[in-house]
Length: 519
Image 1 (cartoon, rainbow, N blue to C red):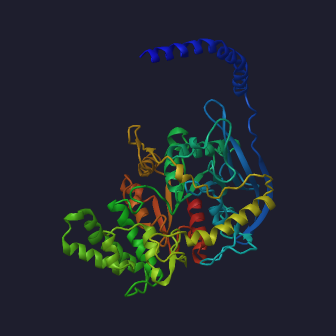
Image 2 (image 1 turned 60 degrees about the horizontal axis):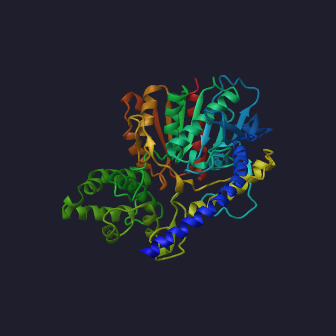
């Protein structure tokens, strides 16, 4: 005990001696800290948005179309007038037109974390990449051609790259997480659209949005957010292979609807690769049969779970083998449920092939014969190099962009994405997963003149057509409003416009929709 007291006394004496020195050190460093704080408080120069403008001409339908292209960024600010983002875009505006009556179309891809170059170079821009369907587009030279399927003769176009993609970046004190989430993304894209309308005097124009993939969630939210927060109404929206509800549009979560909604595209994929025995002669009649079976046999068994009888389970297993080409033994081991990555690896395993998720018509060699899930997507690896090369060359060579910034095609933001969403009917409470069906239901009810076109491929296992039909069936709208929705189907995948026969149909269907709903 004495030793402890003596130790305490020694320590106390040491500290009393050290205190002046420590205080002196603090007094010495304090002005430096104050100077640093003052520097931080000083207003930094606002980042400068840049826009490059060029003029061009193409021929659409045999007629010359002169247009002005603008590529660059708009500076976005928060409610405190502080800069938060340089928001990237490319616009195409036909010259010599009355912009008060001419339609304007805002378009983006999904991801989340995907730039708009897919739609831009694939089908919407006045110039498009030459992509050979079902081939590996990995060997240059990569080519651009005038896009004869463009709607620029009838409407103007703005391609949007959300923050973190393309040339868009957070600036000032803003951080990426302020934009990377369902609701933050919806608000930032809405704010950009409103900013563009004011900056380029397009408030009076008929307004449309085209959103692909996760762009479905974004569009459902933006449509409602524009209407309620900015009083901006849309003439129409085009949903390309849309993802609308996390729970019912995702397989492998032990969700009955989610697992059942993928089955018809498993069947379409097996049909395409001739993995069925017997092999049905035609796709669409076969799919109608499968859909009926899902409703009457498969989904009820999933719902019953352990309450399903042995006979009901056996009937489900026999049907699963017959309609998907994967053995009943495998389905039994999987307890009747399978996500797309297991299916795509198992379907052609014996042939050493793995199948594409984004477009299940594509296939490639299988790096591992014993892998349970796909190691890569044969579609993405076959198409992405051509999209990246053509856009980067086109932006700098033809659109005049001068920048050392990398154009981010896919940022992988989904890894850090905040998936919670405050629905219009949730009393301000965030729902832990994204579902914008309530947003779209409210928007259609509040704006009954808005029309909806859905473009969907049968061979899409990123957003299977069964998930989209399920979403439409569960919109809380009147029978009259359901007449405002039209679904167009394609014998192609997620980006159906790489399919040669679908490209013209996609372009004409989209243009007709815009023209018919612009008056």
